[in-house]
Length: 376
Image (tube, rainbow, N blue to C red):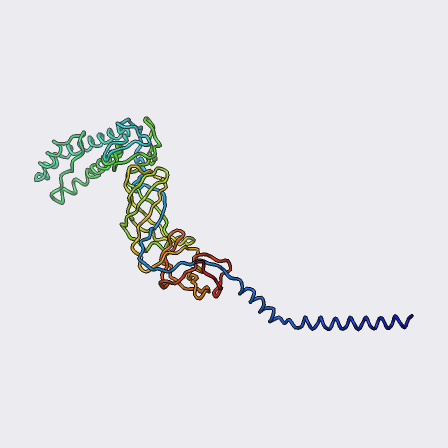
Protein backbone atom coordinates (compact mmCIF):
# COMPACT_ATOMS: atom_id res chain seq x y z
CA UNK A 1 0.00 0.00 0.00
CA UNK A 2 2.73 2.41 0.91
CA UNK A 3 4.61 1.56 -2.30
CA UNK A 4 1.50 2.39 -4.37
CA UNK A 5 1.12 5.83 -2.67
CA UNK A 6 4.77 6.68 -3.24
CA UNK A 7 4.49 5.80 -6.95
CA UNK A 8 1.30 7.91 -7.24
CA UNK A 9 2.99 10.92 -5.59
CA UNK A 10 5.91 10.72 -8.04
CA UNK A 11 3.55 10.62 -11.03
CA UNK A 12 1.57 13.67 -9.77
CA UNK A 13 4.78 15.64 -9.18
CA UNK A 14 6.00 14.91 -12.70
CA UNK A 15 2.67 16.09 -14.18
CA UNK A 16 2.74 19.34 -12.17
CA UNK A 17 6.34 19.99 -13.24
CA UNK A 18 5.50 19.52 -16.93
CA UNK A 19 2.49 21.86 -16.73
CA UNK A 20 4.58 24.54 -14.97
CA UNK A 21 7.27 24.40 -17.65
CA UNK A 22 4.68 24.84 -20.41
CA UNK A 23 3.01 27.85 -18.67
CA UNK A 24 6.39 29.52 -18.11
CA UNK A 25 7.28 29.12 -21.77
CA UNK A 26 4.02 30.71 -22.86
CA UNK A 27 4.47 33.70 -20.53
CA UNK A 28 8.06 34.23 -21.64
CA UNK A 29 7.00 34.35 -25.28
CA UNK A 30 5.21 37.77 -24.73
CA UNK A 31 8.00 40.35 -24.30
CA UNK A 32 7.47 43.96 -22.94
CA UNK A 33 8.33 45.44 -26.35
CA UNK A 34 5.68 43.39 -28.05
CA UNK A 35 3.06 44.44 -25.43
CA UNK A 36 3.85 48.14 -26.05
CA UNK A 37 3.57 47.60 -29.79
CA UNK A 38 0.18 46.02 -29.35
CA UNK A 39 -1.00 49.05 -27.30
CA UNK A 40 0.26 51.48 -29.98
CA UNK A 41 -1.50 49.46 -32.67
CA UNK A 42 -4.70 49.59 -30.63
CA UNK A 43 -4.39 53.36 -30.18
CA UNK A 44 -3.60 53.85 -33.85
CA UNK A 45 -6.66 51.88 -34.77
CA UNK A 46 -8.85 54.51 -33.00
CA UNK A 47 -9.95 57.16 -35.52
CA UNK A 48 -10.86 60.73 -34.34
CA UNK A 49 -13.50 62.36 -36.47
CA UNK A 50 -13.09 66.11 -36.95
CA UNK A 51 -14.32 69.10 -38.90
CA UNK A 52 -12.12 71.71 -40.56
CA UNK A 53 -12.15 75.25 -41.91
CA UNK A 54 -10.44 76.12 -45.20
CA UNK A 55 -8.09 79.09 -44.79
CA UNK A 56 -9.10 82.18 -46.75
CA UNK A 57 -7.00 85.22 -45.87
CA UNK A 58 -8.66 88.58 -46.48
CA UNK A 59 -8.94 92.19 -45.36
CA UNK A 60 -11.25 92.58 -42.36
CA UNK A 61 -12.70 95.47 -40.39
CA UNK A 62 -12.98 94.41 -36.75
CA UNK A 63 -14.83 96.04 -33.87
CA UNK A 64 -13.05 97.04 -30.67
CA UNK A 65 -15.67 96.56 -27.97
CA UNK A 66 -15.52 98.41 -24.66
CA UNK A 67 -17.54 99.50 -21.65
CA UNK A 68 -17.09 102.04 -18.88
CA UNK A 69 -18.72 104.49 -16.50
CA UNK A 70 -19.64 108.07 -17.30
CA UNK A 71 -17.67 110.76 -15.45
CA UNK A 72 -18.10 114.53 -15.52
CA UNK A 73 -15.41 116.21 -17.58
CA UNK A 74 -15.93 119.61 -15.96
CA UNK A 75 -16.64 119.50 -12.22
CA UNK A 76 -15.54 121.69 -9.30
CA UNK A 77 -16.07 121.88 -5.55
CA UNK A 78 -17.24 125.20 -4.09
CA UNK A 79 -15.56 126.49 -0.93
CA UNK A 80 -16.11 129.67 1.04
CA UNK A 81 -13.18 132.03 1.57
CA UNK A 82 -15.07 134.38 3.94
CA UNK A 83 -17.38 134.27 6.95
CA UNK A 84 -20.96 135.42 7.31
CA UNK A 85 -24.65 134.42 7.11
CA UNK A 86 -26.05 133.25 3.78
CA UNK A 87 -28.39 135.73 2.08
CA UNK A 88 -31.23 134.64 -0.21
CA UNK A 89 -30.73 135.30 -3.93
CA UNK A 90 -32.74 134.40 -7.05
CA UNK A 91 -32.50 130.59 -7.15
CA UNK A 92 -32.39 128.13 -4.30
CA UNK A 93 -29.01 126.49 -3.81
CA UNK A 94 -30.33 122.94 -4.14
CA UNK A 95 -29.16 119.81 -5.93
CA UNK A 96 -30.39 119.69 -9.54
CA UNK A 97 -30.68 123.47 -9.98
CA UNK A 98 -29.09 124.75 -13.21
CA UNK A 99 -27.10 128.01 -13.28
CA UNK A 100 -26.02 129.90 -16.38
CA UNK A 101 -22.43 131.10 -16.73
CA UNK A 102 -21.87 134.22 -14.62
CA UNK A 103 -25.18 133.87 -12.75
CA UNK A 104 -25.14 134.74 -9.04
CA UNK A 105 -25.48 131.51 -7.06
CA UNK A 106 -24.66 132.53 -3.48
CA UNK A 107 -24.50 135.80 -1.57
CA UNK A 108 -22.90 136.00 1.88
CA UNK A 109 -23.74 139.03 4.02
CA UNK A 110 -20.86 141.50 3.56
CA UNK A 111 -22.12 144.37 5.76
CA UNK A 112 -19.23 144.17 8.24
CA UNK A 113 -16.66 143.99 5.45
CA UNK A 114 -18.17 147.03 3.71
CA UNK A 115 -18.09 149.09 6.88
CA UNK A 116 -14.49 148.10 7.62
CA UNK A 117 -13.39 149.23 4.14
CA UNK A 118 -15.23 152.55 4.48
CA UNK A 119 -13.57 153.21 7.82
CA UNK A 120 -10.12 152.63 6.34
CA UNK A 121 -10.92 154.87 3.35
CA UNK A 122 -12.06 157.63 5.68
CA UNK A 123 -8.82 157.35 7.64
CA UNK A 124 -6.73 157.51 4.46
CA UNK A 125 -8.74 160.53 3.28
CA UNK A 126 -8.05 162.36 6.53
CA UNK A 127 -4.32 161.55 6.43
CA UNK A 128 -3.93 162.88 2.89
CA UNK A 129 -5.80 166.10 3.74
CA UNK A 130 -3.44 166.63 6.66
CA UNK A 131 -0.47 166.46 4.26
CA UNK A 132 -1.82 168.91 1.67
CA UNK A 133 -0.23 172.07 3.25
CA UNK A 134 3.22 170.44 3.22
CA UNK A 135 2.70 169.16 -0.33
CA UNK A 136 1.69 172.64 -1.48
CA UNK A 137 4.69 174.37 0.05
CA UNK A 138 7.44 171.76 -0.47
CA UNK A 139 6.24 169.76 -3.52
CA UNK A 140 4.19 172.30 -5.44
CA UNK A 141 4.96 170.69 -8.82
CA UNK A 142 2.77 167.69 -7.86
CA UNK A 143 0.30 169.41 -5.54
CA UNK A 144 -2.51 169.60 -8.14
CA UNK A 145 -2.44 165.80 -8.59
CA UNK A 146 -2.96 165.24 -4.87
CA UNK A 147 -5.63 167.99 -4.73
CA UNK A 148 -7.60 166.37 -7.57
CA UNK A 149 -7.26 162.97 -5.88
CA UNK A 150 -8.89 164.31 -2.70
CA UNK A 151 -11.60 166.15 -4.63
CA UNK A 152 -12.66 162.94 -6.39
CA UNK A 153 -12.28 160.70 -3.32
CA UNK A 154 -15.52 158.78 -2.49
CA UNK A 155 -15.67 156.14 0.23
CA UNK A 156 -18.63 154.47 -1.54
CA UNK A 157 -16.62 153.78 -4.70
CA UNK A 158 -13.63 151.56 -5.30
CA UNK A 159 -10.47 153.35 -4.26
CA UNK A 160 -8.57 155.02 -7.09
CA UNK A 161 -4.84 154.67 -7.59
CA UNK A 162 -2.85 157.28 -5.63
CA UNK A 163 -0.80 159.93 -7.48
CA UNK A 164 2.75 158.88 -8.33
CA UNK A 165 5.56 160.88 -6.67
CA UNK A 166 7.58 162.99 -9.12
CA UNK A 167 10.78 163.47 -7.14
CA UNK A 168 12.77 161.19 -4.83
CA UNK A 169 12.21 163.59 -1.92
CA UNK A 170 8.43 163.49 -2.43
CA UNK A 171 8.54 159.68 -2.59
CA UNK A 172 10.39 159.54 0.75
CA UNK A 173 7.98 162.02 2.27
CA UNK A 174 4.88 160.07 1.23
CA UNK A 175 6.47 156.80 2.33
CA UNK A 176 7.19 158.14 5.79
CA UNK A 177 3.49 158.91 6.32
CA UNK A 178 2.44 155.23 5.74
CA UNK A 179 -0.02 156.23 2.99
CA UNK A 180 1.00 153.41 0.64
CA UNK A 181 0.44 150.76 3.29
CA UNK A 182 -3.06 152.09 4.00
CA UNK A 183 -3.87 152.20 0.29
CA UNK A 184 -2.72 148.58 -0.32
CA UNK A 185 -4.65 147.34 2.71
CA UNK A 186 -7.83 148.89 1.32
CA UNK A 187 -7.17 147.28 -2.10
CA UNK A 188 -6.71 143.88 -0.43
CA UNK A 189 -10.03 144.17 1.45
CA UNK A 190 -11.82 145.33 -1.71
CA UNK A 191 -10.58 142.22 -3.49
CA UNK A 192 -11.70 140.06 -0.56
CA UNK A 193 -15.11 141.71 -0.78
CA UNK A 194 -15.69 139.98 -4.14
CA UNK A 195 -15.55 136.60 -2.33
CA UNK A 196 -18.92 137.30 -0.69
CA UNK A 197 -20.67 136.87 -4.05
CA UNK A 198 -20.23 133.51 -5.80
CA UNK A 199 -21.03 133.34 -9.51
CA UNK A 200 -21.24 130.28 -11.75
CA UNK A 201 -17.89 129.90 -13.59
CA UNK A 202 -19.64 128.02 -16.42
CA UNK A 203 -23.09 126.69 -17.24
CA UNK A 204 -23.52 124.11 -14.52
CA UNK A 205 -25.94 121.99 -12.54
CA UNK A 206 -25.59 121.74 -8.77
CA UNK A 207 -24.78 118.07 -8.17
CA UNK A 208 -24.43 118.46 -4.40
CA UNK A 209 -25.38 121.08 -1.79
CA UNK A 210 -24.34 121.24 1.86
CA UNK A 211 -25.91 124.56 2.98
CA UNK A 212 -29.29 126.28 3.29
CA UNK A 213 -30.63 129.84 3.51
CA UNK A 214 -29.70 131.62 6.73
CA UNK A 215 -26.81 129.28 7.53
CA UNK A 216 -23.65 130.79 9.00
CA UNK A 217 -20.86 130.24 6.50
CA UNK A 218 -17.30 129.82 7.72
CA UNK A 219 -14.07 130.28 5.80
CA UNK A 220 -12.93 126.99 4.23
CA UNK A 221 -16.39 125.40 4.45
CA UNK A 222 -17.47 123.33 1.45
CA UNK A 223 -20.67 124.68 -0.08
CA UNK A 224 -21.47 122.25 -2.87
CA UNK A 225 -20.37 120.70 -6.14
CA UNK A 226 -20.89 122.04 -9.67
CA UNK A 227 -21.00 119.85 -12.78
CA UNK A 228 -21.33 120.83 -16.41
CA UNK A 229 -24.68 119.35 -17.55
CA UNK A 230 -23.49 118.00 -20.91
CA UNK A 231 -19.70 117.52 -20.91
CA UNK A 232 -18.74 113.97 -19.94
CA UNK A 233 -16.16 111.30 -20.60
CA UNK A 234 -16.20 107.51 -20.43
CA UNK A 235 -13.26 105.67 -18.88
CA UNK A 236 -12.77 102.18 -20.36
CA UNK A 237 -10.07 99.49 -20.39
CA UNK A 238 -8.92 98.13 -23.75
CA UNK A 239 -6.69 95.12 -24.38
CA UNK A 240 -3.18 95.85 -25.63
CA UNK A 241 -4.01 93.65 -28.64
CA UNK A 242 -6.57 96.29 -29.69
CA UNK A 243 -4.96 99.63 -28.79
CA UNK A 244 -2.93 99.68 -32.00
CA UNK A 245 -6.05 99.62 -34.21
CA UNK A 246 -7.37 103.12 -33.45
CA UNK A 247 -5.99 106.51 -32.49
CA UNK A 248 -6.88 109.84 -30.91
CA UNK A 249 -10.15 111.35 -32.24
CA UNK A 250 -11.36 107.95 -33.52
CA UNK A 251 -15.17 107.79 -33.48
CA UNK A 252 -16.76 105.69 -30.73
CA UNK A 253 -20.36 104.47 -30.89
CA UNK A 254 -21.81 104.37 -27.37
CA UNK A 255 -25.10 102.98 -26.12
CA UNK A 256 -26.91 102.27 -22.85
CA UNK A 257 -28.74 98.98 -22.33
CA UNK A 258 -30.71 100.56 -19.47
CA UNK A 259 -32.13 103.54 -21.39
CA UNK A 260 -31.69 102.41 -25.03
CA UNK A 261 -29.93 105.71 -25.68
CA UNK A 262 -27.20 106.07 -28.31
CA UNK A 263 -24.38 108.63 -28.47
CA UNK A 264 -21.29 109.37 -30.51
CA UNK A 265 -18.00 110.03 -28.74
CA UNK A 266 -14.37 110.57 -29.64
CA UNK A 267 -11.17 109.07 -28.25
CA UNK A 268 -9.73 111.93 -26.17
CA UNK A 269 -6.58 110.43 -24.64
CA UNK A 270 -4.84 107.24 -23.51
CA UNK A 271 -3.67 106.32 -20.03
CA UNK A 272 0.01 105.48 -19.55
CA UNK A 273 -0.34 102.81 -16.86
CA UNK A 274 -0.80 99.19 -17.98
CA UNK A 275 -2.96 96.87 -15.87
CA UNK A 276 -0.63 93.95 -15.17
CA UNK A 277 -3.19 91.18 -14.64
CA UNK A 278 -5.37 91.95 -17.68
CA UNK A 279 -2.70 93.60 -19.85
CA UNK A 280 -5.09 96.41 -20.69
CA UNK A 281 -4.74 100.17 -21.05
CA UNK A 282 -7.09 102.96 -20.00
CA UNK A 283 -8.96 104.84 -22.68
CA UNK A 284 -10.84 108.12 -22.18
CA UNK A 285 -13.73 108.94 -24.53
CA UNK A 286 -15.26 112.43 -24.62
CA UNK A 287 -19.01 112.65 -25.22
CA UNK A 288 -21.36 115.64 -25.01
CA UNK A 289 -25.02 115.11 -24.15
CA UNK A 290 -27.46 116.51 -21.61
CA UNK A 291 -29.13 113.06 -21.51
CA UNK A 292 -26.14 111.53 -19.76
CA UNK A 293 -25.58 111.44 -16.01
CA UNK A 294 -22.48 110.72 -13.99
CA UNK A 295 -22.23 107.07 -12.96
CA UNK A 296 -24.09 105.62 -15.97
CA UNK A 297 -22.63 102.44 -17.48
CA UNK A 298 -22.16 102.67 -21.25
CA UNK A 299 -21.13 100.03 -23.76
CA UNK A 300 -19.60 100.86 -27.10
CA UNK A 301 -17.44 99.89 -30.02
CA UNK A 302 -14.81 101.41 -32.28
CA UNK A 303 -14.63 100.51 -35.96
CA UNK A 304 -10.97 99.57 -36.23
CA UNK A 305 -8.73 100.17 -39.20
CA UNK A 306 -8.53 97.55 -41.98
CA UNK A 307 -6.51 94.47 -41.03
CA UNK A 308 -4.83 92.93 -44.05
CA UNK A 309 -4.09 89.25 -44.83
CA UNK A 310 -5.75 87.71 -41.78
CA UNK A 311 -8.34 85.06 -40.98
CA UNK A 312 -10.88 85.10 -38.18
CA UNK A 313 -10.93 81.99 -35.98
CA UNK A 314 -12.42 81.04 -32.58
CA UNK A 315 -10.01 81.78 -29.73
CA UNK A 316 -10.47 78.26 -28.34
CA UNK A 317 -8.43 76.87 -31.27
CA UNK A 318 -5.24 78.67 -30.15
CA UNK A 319 -2.59 76.31 -28.72
CA UNK A 320 -0.04 77.72 -26.25
CA UNK A 321 -0.85 81.26 -27.49
CA UNK A 322 1.25 80.68 -30.62
CA UNK A 323 -0.17 78.00 -32.94
CA UNK A 324 -3.24 76.18 -34.27
CA UNK A 325 -3.77 72.63 -35.48
CA UNK A 326 -4.00 72.04 -39.21
CA UNK A 327 -4.86 68.76 -40.95
CA UNK A 328 -2.40 67.29 -43.42
CA UNK A 329 -2.62 63.72 -44.76
CA UNK A 330 -5.32 62.97 -42.17
CA UNK A 331 -3.01 63.90 -39.31
CA UNK A 332 -2.86 66.88 -36.95
CA UNK A 333 0.08 69.25 -37.35
CA UNK A 334 0.88 72.41 -35.35
CA UNK A 335 1.19 75.55 -37.47
CA UNK A 336 2.56 78.75 -35.84
CA UNK A 337 0.40 81.88 -36.23
CA UNK A 338 0.59 85.56 -35.31
CA UNK A 339 -2.37 86.74 -33.24
CA UNK A 340 -3.08 90.18 -34.69
CA UNK A 341 -6.21 91.02 -32.72
CA UNK A 342 -8.60 89.46 -30.23
CA UNK A 343 -12.28 90.32 -30.49
CA UNK A 344 -14.35 88.68 -27.76
CA UNK A 345 -14.39 84.92 -28.41
CA UNK A 346 -12.75 85.33 -31.81
CA UNK A 347 -9.24 86.15 -32.94
CA UNK A 348 -7.61 87.46 -36.09
CA UNK A 349 -4.51 85.46 -37.04
CA UNK A 350 -1.88 85.80 -39.74
CA UNK A 351 0.53 83.16 -41.07
CA UNK A 352 -1.72 80.45 -42.52
CA UNK A 353 -1.65 79.57 -46.22
CA UNK A 354 -4.86 79.76 -48.23
CA UNK A 355 -6.82 76.50 -48.60
CA UNK A 356 -5.05 74.96 -45.60
CA UNK A 357 -7.48 72.92 -43.52
CA UNK A 358 -7.62 74.24 -39.94
CA UNK A 359 -9.01 72.04 -37.20
CA UNK A 360 -12.39 73.65 -36.43
CA UNK A 361 -12.98 71.99 -33.06
CA UNK A 362 -11.10 71.08 -29.92
CA UNK A 363 -10.15 67.42 -29.48
CA UNK A 364 -9.40 66.15 -25.99
CA UNK A 365 -5.81 64.93 -25.80
CA UNK A 366 -4.89 66.22 -29.26
CA UNK A 367 -1.24 65.90 -30.21
CA UNK A 368 0.90 66.42 -33.26
CA UNK A 369 0.61 63.40 -35.55
CA UNK A 370 -2.80 62.29 -34.20
CA UNK A 371 -4.78 60.54 -36.97
CA UNK A 372 -8.09 62.14 -37.84
CA UNK A 373 -10.78 61.60 -40.40
CA UNK A 374 -12.55 64.67 -41.78
CA UNK A 375 -16.32 64.79 -41.69
CA UNK A 376 -17.43 65.89 -45.13
